[in-house]
Length: 285
Image 1 (cartoon, one colour):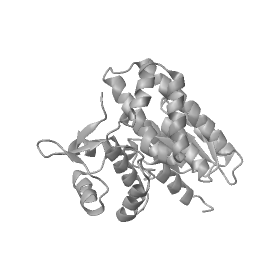
Image 2 (image 1 turned 135 degrees about the vertical axis):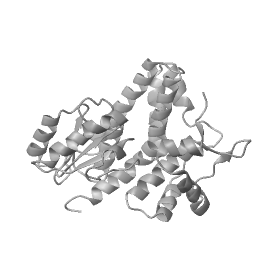
Image 3 (image 1 turned 90 degrees about the horizontal axis):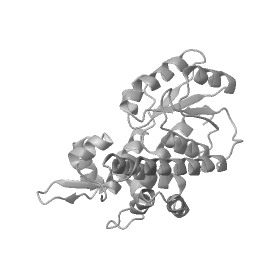
C-alpha cells in the first residue's frame, strides 16, 4: 500500500480544518500545493496533512495564520515528494525486524530536531502504521513491535531531557482505561525540552491517583489526552475532578480533544506548539 492520497473533503475530516480554510491557506500563503486528480479534484498526501496539522496547531496556539504558515514552511520536509517517507519503517515492521525499526528511528532523530521529527514524521508514520494494520497489510504483532520500540526511544529521550528542572511540575498521563500514550510521552519530552518540570504518570491513571499526585507534587497543571472519541468522557472526568480541591487546571491534547469542552484548554495537534503553549502558561513565565 502506497502513501495516503486523499481529497480535500477527506483531508478536512482528518485534520478538522474546514475545506474553505484549506483553500485559503493554499491561495494566500502557498502552504499547500495539492496535486490534482484526472477530474481536477485536489489531492493531499501525508506531507500535506502533516503541514495542515502543524499550521492548525500554531493557529490554535495564538499565532497569526501568516506567521504560522511561515513557521511551517521554515521547517523542511526533508523528503523527495516521489519517495514514500514511511516505506522503510513499514517494511521493517512487516518483517518483524526490530533492529531495522530501531535503525529507521535512529536515522530520523539524528537528522532533525526532536519536535520536528515527531510532528512531521513520527506521528504521521504511526497513523500510517495503524491504517496498514486496519487494511490487513501488516500484522498486529508488527504494529505492537513499532509501538514498543517507539516507546523505548521516547522514554530514553524523556530521561535525557533532564529530571532536575526548576519550578513546580506538570502532571502528564492518560485517563483511566486509556492505554494510548505515545503522543503523551512525546509531549512530555518536548515539555521538558522547553524547560517545564514534569511528572509522567503513564497510561490508565485512576482519578484518585490524579488527585493524590496533584496534592503531593504541588503541580501547577495537568495534561491528558483524548486519542479516541470514546475517551472524551474519561478525560472530562479528570478535568472535573481536578477542578475541585486542589483546583488544578487540566490541558487536553489528542485527536478528539475538541470533545472536551469545559474548560477550553486545548493543546492542539503539534507537539512543538503544544509545549510552547504550556511553557507560556507557566506561573513564572
